[in-house]
Length: 68
Image (cartoon, rainbow, N blue to C red; front, side, top):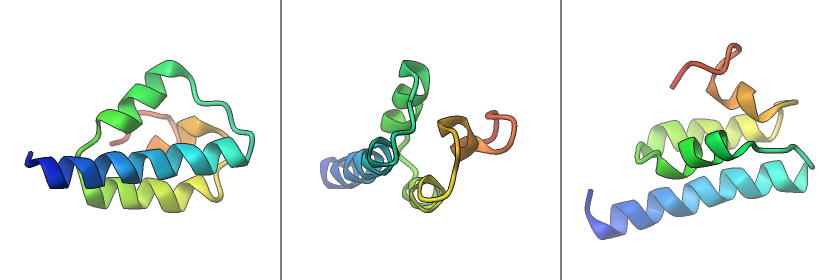
């Protein structure tokens, strides 16, 4: 992945984490790593949208925490 695209992905991942933090939703280290290592901008955009409504960080990855 090129530097600019990686930077954009990292910025999107940080936004996801910031929304969760602002909502006082804890993010376990394993999920934080999963979010910050993602390079798929569409997936990160989806997670950012979900971050606004989820009750738990695991819900960003689907109901069982396993998806994407």
